[in-house]
Length: 390
Image (cartoon, rainbow, N blue to C red):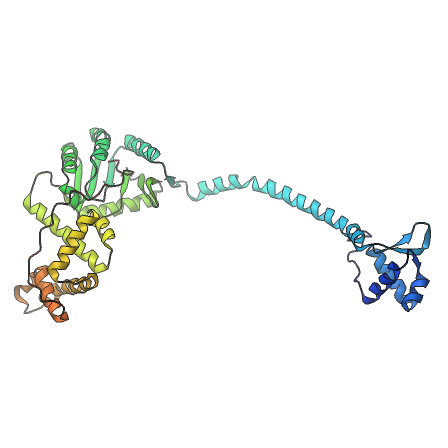
């Protein structure tokens, strides 16, 4: 509504503009004079004058209602829009008040919805000291079982020393403990000493060739896993379904593991070395980078690269692409060799399998060789200190 209570303001027609132009030429002017000066009939002039007055562009002279005075567009604009601006401001203030009152209820709704939808919300922790405190508290309250998986090969001595007391306290309370390492941890004397001590107290430790998820699981009620993007952080999970999923994943890896040898066993060393070498070969076929392969098998990057170079040398590969081709074809060779009439060729060594493949490719004439035992991986790099709690 305008200042006169109208819902819509009149349009500025060409006639109205002509009347306004005539009115601006005089200090004041009557309707008859406008008709004379504009050469418009009386009806058109009266209609235009009415519209201009409603727009605030014309007003009656103070001392002579029969005469009209032209008003500047700026003054008319302020006069006409002023009430509208005040109305808009009042409406905006009312909107702001409503928003404030309703937004004050958001925390209450969020808290209620969160409790309703997920009473076991995960906790993201980025501070290393807080992570250690949480792990210590969970270990102190564990009553039946603690499962730990520690990928990355040998573990730093200071981390092992830090977790020793906590581990022995758990074992003293008859809490069952199972720990999973990678095969390369067997070549670390500090890790061997640690495992020897905790297994004497009743803990079980196994190793596998390739990597797995780093996790600590307490009584299958809480799990602590790595926090992506934060090397010093961790995610504490208490949702029963998620914790059970993590625990079942651990159980699957555990079933594939072999007992950690605390005494030197040549056959065990050869078996572990062969499995690590086979894992490197499989990852090469899958096209993983050197760095990713090193992480997956628990070796330092330099040690892993030496093994990759040795594998490529043995099979006569000229580059990574060529190696992938030769290794992939060699992987298929055992199934072909064990078909009827294949005789004892089904157990051919890697070199024996790859040599004819390379010869068919016309790239290299490889000499059959037996797999070389993997050298000790004593410098595989430190595991994350974050979850080294057990």
